[in-house]
Length: 299
Ligand SMILES: [Mg+2]
Image (tube, rainbow, N blue to C red; front, side):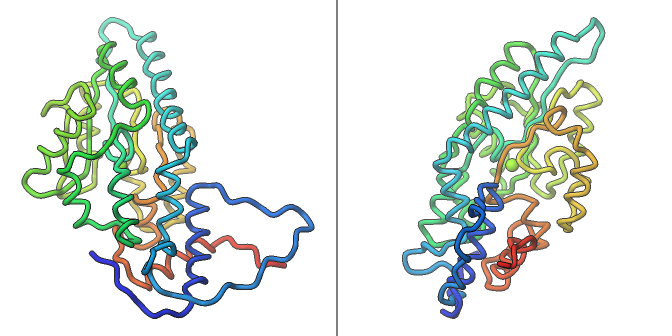
């Protein structure tokens, strides 16, 4: 994939819409105080993709948040603290004869953060996930531990709770080797073939999860994508996805621990029909429609 330059009209309109998308994604939009002046009319039109200095890149807000926000990192600590509380409770409740305890975790954006990859996309004026760049970047081993992941994994190991890594990646024949290198880089326990599953042809993690559940009591599932918990969330409808999640509301923070990801995942697939939509103006317009599905009309 590569970003394609387009016409120069309506760029700012797009930018404002895309900025809304980013703000919505990170949940930080602020309302004006009551009685505030009317919202300015639309800025000069511009529909180009990112070009020139790239400050009109729709990914900038989300990636800046990932790169800098203490809140982003705090959400990882929060997630791992919640997971640890459940592991502690499960250890305490164990009785002789019970199945051994396990944790099932995703890798990317859960225990590992690909921050340099996203910074690279912004520097190259790319405004959509770029699979070719990702495949080049993965073997560079620049992925870093997410905050709290190493302590949590060590705690599991120290208490005999096995950790299973189930990831969906495809960088060709060496995919598995690259994923294993990332676990070793993290200092992850149970970095072996019995505990690492890499799905190259599908993102469906459920068969492997169900297999693990036959032999282990899975205390928690960790992931940044609802698909990391159950396959039923794999739908191309935004509304269905929201509904399915709400049906399982009691599971979140209990059985499922979600980590934040405002740049990629199946939430994008629900908007675009594709987890990795190409960088087209149609897709930029689709993103704006998603960002304005709830919008004040200015009255
Ligand atoms: Mg992930």
